Every structure is written in structure tokens, then in C-alpha cells.
Length: 432
Image 1 (cartoon, helix red, strand yellow):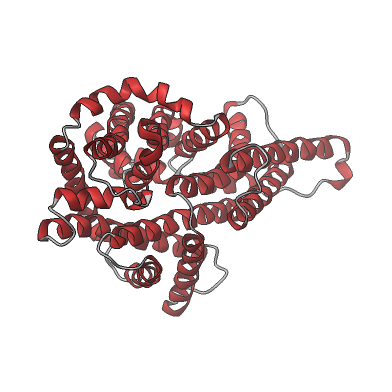
Image 2: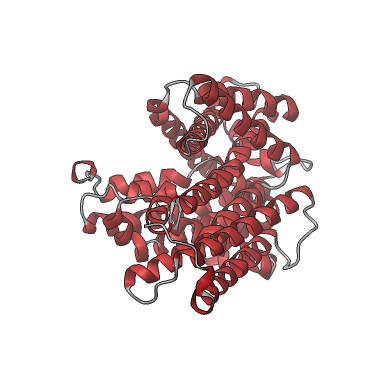
């Protein structure tokens, strides 16, 4: 692994930031900020706070190298690895749906209908994902940097830099507009997701040394916190300048502002800025499908072939399209899928960490029962709330998913331990 550990602090920070600085981050924050002003940056700020919290586990990941599902699978059996992998696969459906929604509302600014855009984008995501275009990722990141520069220019044109400088002081008071269940649900699930997120872990293990590891995480956290308040400041400045139509949909707020910066959706620069925002959606959407397909094929349920790869990819794209057509706010959609993954994996992972630290060792059957109960409950609540968003017990969808999933995960762990201790005759032979 040492030959792959080449990232200095700045390179690591850049990759950590790029893992979450995308269309969900930009368009989701802008959508929320249309009604919540600075408080609309809650999700983006939580990503920065989660990166600070990552310092607690960074050295552990750097030392262990392997991904969470491999670590848990090696200790508790292949069934555990498969279930964790499936929950990771499930969480990616939400991210894929967000790319479809984002792309569709970017194109809406150009006058293209949302429904048609989503269908065409789903097809494009599928086709691109089966092509060998992984090395084009630098292009997608470069275009996001272009849009970042466009936002800075827009902030200057709209005289919004004073608003941006005030935003750190206004952020906490502005959270009074957000209900307590939503505040807890969004922030907690996002912060915990960063701690056990494969996207972050794959970069952390490539730090060249421990010093670069910690410095990179701190620098990434600072950059994310600075970026978090940029979209909301641009939206507030645009509102104060009166350039936004009164009936604008929150999802098209940022594309509209970019087109305005370029002189309008009918001007060449305006079109270029909009398209430059759309292309990263194609890159992220296709790469997510590629990861999902690889995850399923790694289970060896189906033989690896071009036909099966296309079949699985198409199935994943259809699921994402179904979720996207259901609609909903971008941040809520992202975080609800995050919450399902966190709820399923958190308790078994904590049990694993306790065993690694020598504090307490739960039996294999207890951890398996915990994972099954938390995964089934979290995914069931997620699906039910997607079908009927009014089915919320604790005042917020994400909090709903996490409370039920984590509670049943803890319950499964304790019940399994009791069975293991007091009913040894029922003990199932554990895998080594």
C-alpha cells in the first residue's frame, strides 16, 4: 500500500473537498437558501463539521486501509459484507436521483421540460457509465471550478461580498428558522455519514504520512466551511438585487443566476455556464452507476459479462429515475438516503471498534442480528417515507429513519448477546 500513499496535505484536501462539492452541494444549498437564507447552508456546513470529526477515525482508516464492508466482513462473515455493500448501494440510488433532478432543472432554465430531461439524462448516464471514461473526471472537476469562479464573479456583480463576510456570524442565529427535528436530522446524519463514508475513506488511506493525513483533513474542513456559505450568499444577494422571478423553483435558482451572470440563457456565455454545470452531473451520475454495478457484480450473484453489466446498470438507472420522478427537495433526498446507510452500519461498526480497542467483544451472531434489524428497518422506513412523506413520527424524515434504525440495531445487538450468553444451545457456529 505504501506505493499508493503519495498524497500530501493539499492534494488530500482537494480530493476530500471534491468528494462532496458537487451539484447536490451547490443546487441543494441554493434551493434551501431561497427560503431559509443563510440557514440554507446547514447541509453544507455539516459536511465541514463532519470532516473535522473525521480526525477521530482518520488514523484508524489510514492504518487499516480496507473499506468498512471488508473490515466487518472479515470479522463477522461474508453475509455482513454483502448487507453492508447493499446498504451502500442503496444510498447511491439517492445520490444518482439527485444528479437527475439537478440536471433536469439546469436544463429547465434553457426551456427544456423536466420530465423529458430526466428520462434523457437517465439514458445518458447509463450509456456513459459503460464507456471507459473514468479519466475524464479531471474535466468534471475543472468545470465545477469554473462555476465556483462564476459564483465569485456573481457575488461581486451583485455586491454580495459584504453578505458573504457576514454569513458566518448570521449562520447560527438563522437556524431559528429550522425546526429542531430537522436541525438534528440533517446535521447528525450528514456528520455521521462523513465518518463512515467510502468516498472519504478511499482518499484518506492515500495520505503519504500521518501528518499529511491530519493536515489534509483540517484544510478540507476549512475549505468546505468556506464553500458552504457561498451559494447561500449568492442567492441572498440575488434576492436583494431583485433578479429572481417570483415563481422560480428553488432547484433552478443557481442555474438561473449563472445564466444571468452570462447575460441570459439566450446568450453564448450564459449557455456555456449552464452547460458547464450540467456536464459534472453527467460525470457524477455515470460514475455512481459504475460503482453500483461493480458492487452488485462483486457479490458474484451474476456472472460478469457485458450484457449483465448493462442489465444491472439499466436497473440501477431506472430505480434512480423512479426516485427522481417522485420529487422532493435536493438536500432532503440526499440526507434521507445518507440516514438509511448510517442507521444500518453505525451500530455494527461501533461494535467492531469496541472489539478493536479491546473494550468489549460482541459475538458474531449479535452483530449480524443487529445489522439485519437496522438495515431492514432503515430501508423500510426510507421506502415508506419516499412513497408517503407524511409518515413521519419524530418530526423529520432523516431523524425518523435514524431513530428507528439505530434503536433496532442496538436492540438486535443486545438481544443477540443475551441469546448468546443464556441460550448457548441456539448458538450458530461462527465463521472465522
